[in-house]
Amino acid sequence: MKIDINNITMIYPSGKKALQDITVSLESPGFIGILGPNGAGKTTLMKLMIAGLIPTKGEIILDGKPLLSQETRLKAQLGYLPQSFGLYDELTVWQFLDYMAALKGVKDRKAVDEAINRTSLTEQRKTRIRSLSGGQRQRVGIAQALLGDPQLIILDEPTVGLDPEERVKFRNIFSEMAQNKIVLLSTHIVEDVQAVCSRVLVIYGGLILYDGTPSALISDAAGHVGTYISQAGDPVPTGCRIVTKVNVREGIRCRVVAEKLPDFSESTEPTLEDAYLYCIHKEGRQ
Amino acid sequence: MTKVFGYELKRMLTSGLFIAMLAVNAVFAWYVLTTEVIEGIAYTAPFSVWSSCAFIGKTLPLAVITVLLLQAGYYGKQQKRVEIITSAAPMTYAQTMMIRTSVLGICFLVICLVDSLLGAVFFAAFFGYYGFGAFILPALLEIIPCFVFTVGIGHLAGRLHCSLIYALLPAVFIAGFIGASGAFDLFGGGFFSAYPLTLPIGADGEPGFVLNSAWLIARFIYLAAGAIILIANSAFHPKIKRA
Image 1 (cartoon, each protein chain N blue to C red):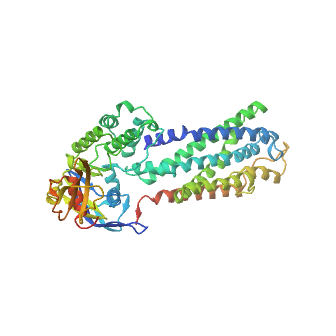
Image 2: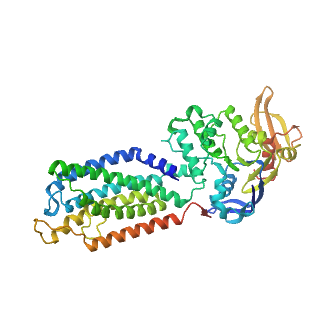
Image 3: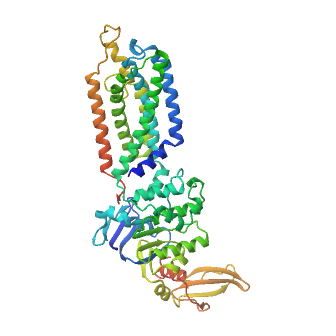
């Protein structure tokens, strides 16, 4: 599967410009992480990719043909987990997934049981959805996205509400699936992207600021991340963005990103989170 | 699609709203039977076809109100949240509309069957009357166009805004319980109470049953209008929005 997003601009009827002239190409196999702050345009990009919106300008090409002309074909190969969603509370977990399998045209009778096992919902299979916890509901959402071995998996904040152990487990499941598919993962949890994604898109203000490997993004930030000790009430040095603050015996250890680090700071090895923040920061965008 | 239909039907038939409204419909039907039909409609026998048609016509508005309340669920916030997931499945909007309309149709049918069953029990128990066969065709002519038209309007209203379905409820109430008695009476309660009074009395002491042609034309118009609205509604799906 190959998806070409060509010069996409999306302006909502309210006038909000969500995406500006975005061009990106996705090909299987690939595990692509999308990073960006709230309102950056991540969800809009995902909605465009599932034919849930028509772009104001530009087009999306699926295997050489316009996406909108093959919406049914796309959806037959799609596993989609939105950021916020509802479930039929009156159905049991098994019934809801069986219903979703029928909607997706999944013929394999074992698919529902496989999805239940994969998402550790075996004990809840006969539990009504209204009785599930937030994390369990999220797992039902993930299970429906995995039904029927989809070729394109789009996950918008999939690990929200999951405990750390579950988060690691699921990101490994997604990683396994990406061996022969396109998996698109939008998240605020940079660690998830660092652990599993082979490619990162950084979106901010409707623009793609970075498209490449996580390691290259980290390399870009080398020499732009530093630490220093400050005292309570000290101003943030000009041109710096604080990444973390930790109280230590000498005062407050500040970790900053900056185009030019202050002389009193000590340069340190960047993480992906530092690199992401530096990427957004470096063009004076935040 | 059959399995999806099965689940949608199960969800609707087992919902608290449907069960509660079914009970209310049954109580109301029995009330109509024991307070109005028992005296005979338009000076005809309580078990005449005229009385039977008037009984159906008087119970239909509540059945329609029930269906509109169920239909509102398809356009409510909870459903919209589920649709965020279900709309990513390859089922078309037309198929979804077909399933929803069929589910509502079965709910409507169940209500009408329960009302009719109560009517049958009433006629048998109070009058020892069992000739229900003559009631079927006129009842279907009342029920089907009424359902198709109101469900079509309901889908149209719901698509524009969920609250518009609720705005239809007082309109149904006024039209059904207070309103028309002419051929265009959507439900027939008023028409079948008034029309026999205009007919000559037959040898058996009451007007012979005939279906008025103006009333039949009105049924056809309601049926056609409802079908057109349903088809148009299914053909133009609002899911994809151009900015």
